[in-house]
Figure (cartoon, rainbow, N blue to C red):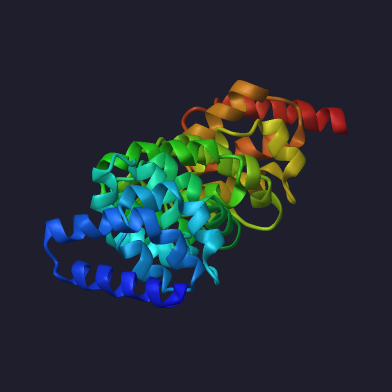
Length: 309
């Protein structure tokens, strides 16, 4: 009898025993495979059938050797096997985080949620998902938001960890814009300090509202007064396409408070002889602002007119 025939006989004997389905019969086969699994792999038996009859700890311990003996790439197959027998691997003392490294290649938020449900730590899930999260951050921030919400809904206790990840990536303009533009959703689902993200948003985009947009185009979570807090009057005059009075007019049209901008002008510039300042204060006076001393304003304007003459 040649070696192949002898190996076939062992195989069928072990397979028949395993198919009996009892715990005892499976244990007998597990012990048999401990001695023979390498021979079966080298002989080209179906790798899935081989590892199915091995002790789970033997599959785990000999993972790299199993891959090297297989006649084709079986990483994905072993990953599926680990997922299907997850609890048995855990019962062998293998941690969920370790199992996650070999079970699947994360390609979407569904894979992330699967690992979360399996008990894998958020830190490990985010680490394994780095390439996916980087792609989301650059090309599809809405997909990032959806993924985080799905994970949070899967396990609400992970909310703080997800917020921490966002905090660590506040240098990413796409993420900041997504959080601010969808502030109602983010704030409903997560305990985030939206003011931080507004500061970042204005740092990235604030100057554009002097050149390409108007204050009416600000995201819903940024009132004109909040925008105003990020700029000095001097800086506003430098950046504005038009005059300061035109900026004040746009500010009021966008719903800004006349007293707030008047107080800012007076605090920073007082009743300056600068024509732009005087025009802006005059406009606010016409709009009914009570903070402006009309007599003093008129006096400065008259004095300026005399000086010009």
